[in-house]
Image (cartoon, rainbow, N blue to C red; front, side):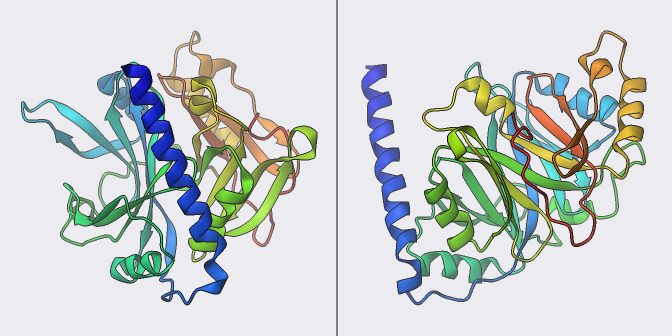
Length: 318
């Protein structure tokens, strides 16, 4: 029975992806509504095995604070919100055995959600969950990319929990004050590019070579901001390890050396962070990776120099 449900789900997803590809292939033949601003990442959300343990990691190791959380009907916390800056958060969801450490979704923010909805509809894009107000008070809608990644698009409201937290919960202990990018696994380049570049307006700034001369990764910058999506090509069905280690988000650091020293002072010598080393080369700024308690990857990287685009580095996400 479970096998039948799985095949049914895969068939539905395959048909959905085909519809997306067909819709995107006709973009230039359509008259679309004007695309409003897409300003950058609002949040990245992941599933965790132990919410308390991961909250402690973000607080005691990474130095962040939690301004608010959401509870179930019994008062038990089910979602924690870790504040990076006034416009960016990390959302932590209590997961299960199959989803621990996995990316749940990421969110972009716009200054005109009504216009964004009209733009997406003019492209024939399917809206998984139409515009509504979330539990923290910001209106948003949800779409899904060809690889099944959920993408929320929201507009911030001054009356929301995030609006009421403006200027607060940003201690100097934070290892970073900016989510620069989100990396996601894709199985095929063309459908992903039609979705993110052609429909959402992201622009390519770099790509690296993978196996057999195929693209290994492609960076696409938000049309109205500096944040970027990293498409990581993993042909076929990705393993749970791929999803946990390749799907990731990046944090900016003015000095990764100083940041790493700070982190290593906050953990015991037995911690994996104690043996982390800084990566250089490939035309990219210095960077290093840390893993959360579930093994999900967080990349810490120095900002790109003004006007500089990243160069091809086939080992970046390997």
